[in-house]
Image (cartoon, rainbow, N blue to C red; front, side):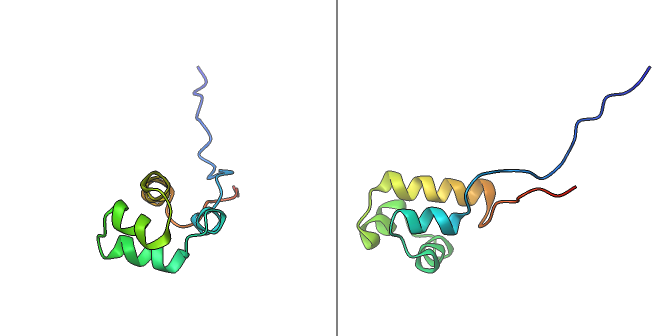
Length: 74
């Protein structure tokens, strides 16, 4: 019997965090500093003049994918 092994190729088309912060007008370096300094979504949102939901989305992206996204290679 042949065993089927799923591919583990690191492919994703998710935009990088740099791209996402640029799209919403958030300075990437200052955003990362806010995360590093354990600031709340509300504090970071106020600094950049965006919604808490926007910052929560960016924080979630960072926690899930990191800074960049991997574009395939075997």
